[in-house]
Amino acid sequence: MPAHLKPQKEISGRLYENPFMDRITRTPIWVPQIMWLTISAVFFWISITKTDIFPFQIIILGMAGFITWTLTEYVVHRFLYHTETESDLLYDIQYKGHGFHHLYPKDPERLAMPPLPGLVLSSFFLGLFYLMMDTYALAFFPGFMLGYNCYITMHYFQHVVKSPKYKPWKALWRHHKAHHYSDPYAAFGVSTRLWDWVFGTMPNKSSKASTG
Image (cartoon, rainbow, N blue to C red):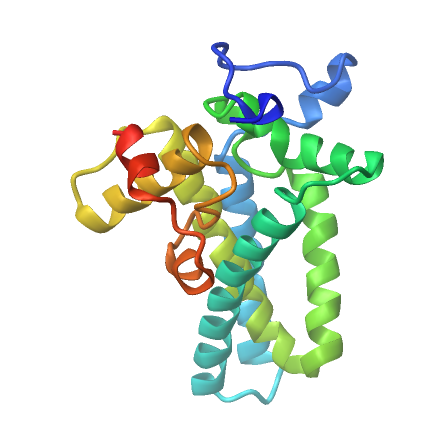
């Protein structure tokens, strides 16, 4: 386990010495949950009432957006947050965006992105989707953000709630624990194990066994 990713005994630590800066890097999970549910509902309403997109197309676009999030989750986690680098800038992004979470994986206020950077990044994705698919993005984007909301909810529970008995969820819990406590260079999926299976990054049996 690399030292910069090894879980610490303490529950929480300071990301910034400045109290204000440290405070705004924290968020109760319900804040982004409500925010993204509301934003997704608004965009679905706009796509239904303000565009010529047919209802069945809205459903398909929403589902496609949701699935696209799961792949985005995997790609960002693997190729941005866990890429070895000698770049000070990229390392700083990795540490503040994700590495600190590896050090304090049970800190309940750092299990989801705070609202302000979340809004900035979601605006980028909305603009990108609109450039690619015009008004269809108004139905695709809320599905994408519902996927993100599912991800942060699942991620939160995986860190603060005991592994459930329901087998598919229990497998996800063990999968994410293997990433944190056995092999941070495998098991990149949080809301699904699909892309780890597709791209050959499933944790080995010994990693899963060591997590209980």
